Image (cartoon, helix red, strand yellow):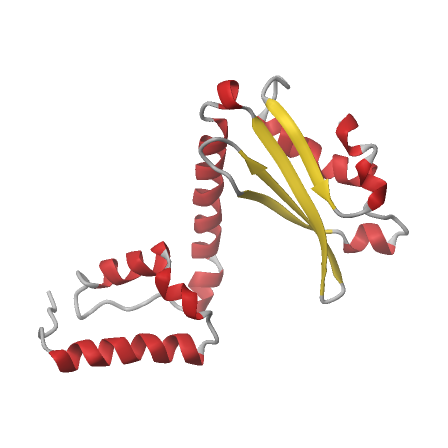
Length: 173
């Protein structure tokens, strides 16, 4: 196994490589303070010199799908854990990003306060003359609520921030 020499020049090169990577890729400087970055550095310490990083196609394909599946499984378990005691909350927000109408569907439980369940592209609905009103939003939320709370016994709260048309009727899911 490859072990780097433990001297100041190797540490300086590693520090500069990290800074250069962050700067050149336009990443937020705070990325180096996160748990994911810490895990990356820890993992790299034990790699053999022969290690070859995954290609961008693998990262954007198989590994993205695997990461999504693992995250969703983690979210589902965390949200349902102790939900019978503490309940579940669903919340969301509409957004338009570069003329793309989106709807964020999130959930919270005692062990997971911000699970991103879905980000819905509402373009087709809007193009066909629809609006992001309470009826449309409830149709998007309902499958997630039924999946996480099939007996309709643990959902305490459903909140949505945005259009004034949503305020009065969304609570009637």
